[in-house]
Image 1 (tube, rainbow, N blue to C red):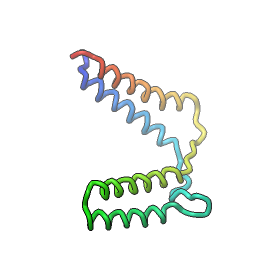
Image 2: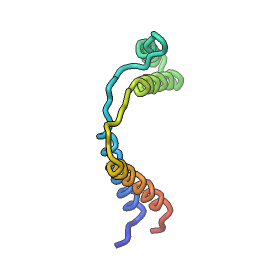
Image 3: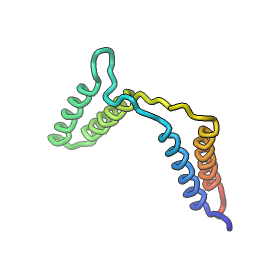
Image 4: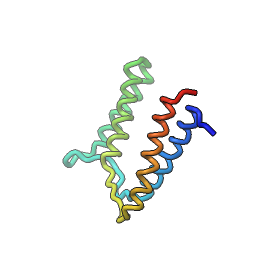
Length: 118
């Protein structure tokens, strides 16, 4: 049985998701909040900017106000991601390989699916 381009991509995506699921399962998040710049939490500033951007988008809905709302949402998400403290518990090399190999194989299958002829 020969896989088509779509088959390679689907199988590769499933392998990547499996590997990332096992990798994320091995991580623990010890802190969740907004990034702090010195003694100032960026979350409060970004939420105020987000509210101002939303008001501007409702008052004057144009391309720039929509972009401003999108930028503040991205900055809020980035602030939360930067504040995460992620650590991995002690795992063996076999466990690491069982996490990394499906991701590598999945990327390979997706690349092969991109260059395979139907």
